[in-house]
Length: 315
Ligand SMILES: [Zn+2]
Image (cartoon, rainbow, N blue to C red; front, side):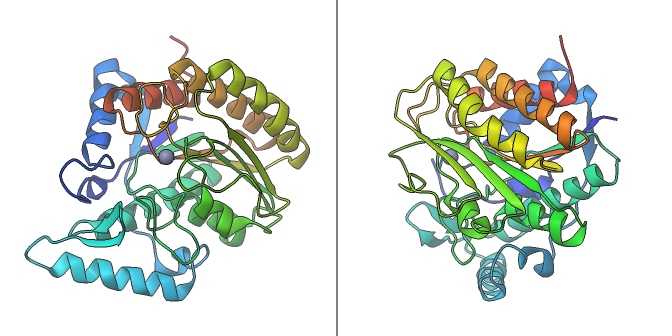
């Protein structure tokens, strides 16, 4: 079985203005690098449908879902291509509706494909990202929490009893924490720079959270040892039946949105740990979704390092 790869074309339609780091070129850089390295040839490219309101409402309030979808649908119809700011860094434009619905739809489709045994594991190269989107709020470039929607689908619809959410984006996944804190069917393990946007996570919101804030300029060796000390014992005893990854690559040394010092080899190492864990407890089931990563070259190289381990490519 292969690694399924989802990257709906609609995810490139969402734009938040000239010079914005969360731009469609992020997905182009990933795809170009996969082609240039030949990694595209080992991936199983798959299409995804849009997410449904019912699927979104497993992670968000139904009021929030209808309010955001109305705003997005309205922007889609506007001829002038104007942007509607929801926070100082996050805007809805004409292409946001389609992008957001397909991004979350891909995460759900990937979950089904992996549970159904059609793929060993899956990566969703999607945008907008999701891990800052709370139950009731868009923020930090995020509208719908793709990973939380997918995890709840696995639990509520597909009948899994325990899933893990891993978040290694440089920013704390406050939205995911807001949604799943107290849901003891989920263990969330994260590592993030602190202090840094959104300035949360130092005090976990639930007993099902393993939050590891690290100071600026922390590098790979320290990150690897805190993962082994803090995440792995909790994950081993939780025995997740499936692992979801909020795969942000902005903790890379070359990424200017944070000040951590990871490199491609660190992302490969983290992925190896998670693949081994999934093989021990979860029948290998992993669904990984792109979150941040804004230096285009470092992003593409890091995604490739992550995918090589997921796909079992040793060369
Ligand atoms: Zn980030």
